Structure formats: structure tokens, C-alpha cells
Length: 174
Image (cartoon, rainbow, N blue to C red; front, side, top):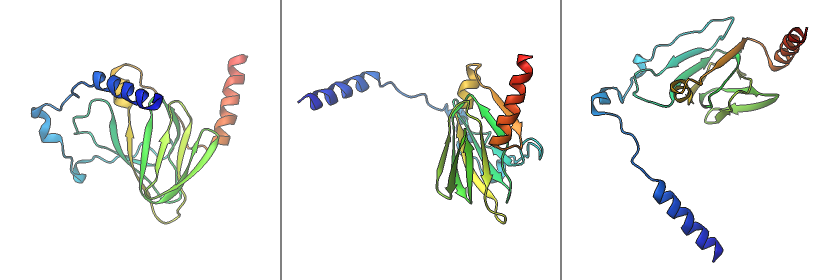
């Protein structure tokens, strides 16, 4: 009986919390579909981030951002961390991610979660085909709150990052 009572209490709390979700105003409905040729692809730069990004800018989203990301064969994104959470869906390709001090392998159809303020980098394992990923992050919400932050250490791996951070900490102690 305790289990049934707990479930009933839980359902009651959820029912009381339900409120209508915000709706996209009708005058913004012209942008509920963004066509592939409307996505502006850009490359942040070979030295800082050799991947290509395609932000889906015209959607009227209020709390998250959507990107397409492409990592060339044998290449990687930059080593970065940020306040927001992000989820990559691997549309095509195989690779791995350094997330903190661990390595996670992935392939087409997998999801890769990046927690807030954890150093990470995504690698393309193929020497022939690019990796394409669909990326959703809650950076827009944090930006509205004045809390968004992103930091990059460029094209280094996690071992190099640890050495660089040790050097920076040693300099700060002097």
C-alpha cells in the first residue's frame, strides 16, 4: 500500500505543478522550419577549433541553441569547457570524446553528453570520412541569466591540458 500511496501523492504534486508551457507567438511561426540551405556554416579557425559549426539561428527558441557540427577526417574539435550542458547526436561517423580524464567511444546513432564546466574534446577516428553531429545546448538560457561562459585551450589533448593547467597554477603561486 505504501508504494501506491507514494505514487498517488507524486501524481498529485505533478498535477498541481502543471501550468501551460510558453508558446511560440504566431508572428514567429514563419521560422518554425529552417531549411538546410539557411544554416550559415563557419569555421572558428584551424588553430582554435578546426571543426565546422552550423548554428540554426532562425528558430524562435528561447532557452537552448541548436548547431550542426562537422569534424573533418582525422581531426578534432577544440579542448573546451562551458557553463552550459550539451548533447551531441552523432548523425554519421565514428570517433571518441575526452570528457574530463576519461575517453568515450561513439558512432552513428549515439548521444554524447557534456556536463557543465568539464574539459572536453571530440575526435573523428576516421581518416576518410567526416563526422557530422547535431548539437543541443542550454547556453541561451544561461546567456539570458548572464551566466554563460565558455573557455577554450585550442587544439590540445587532455594530457597537454593538464600540463598547461599545472604551469598556470605554478605561475599564479609565484
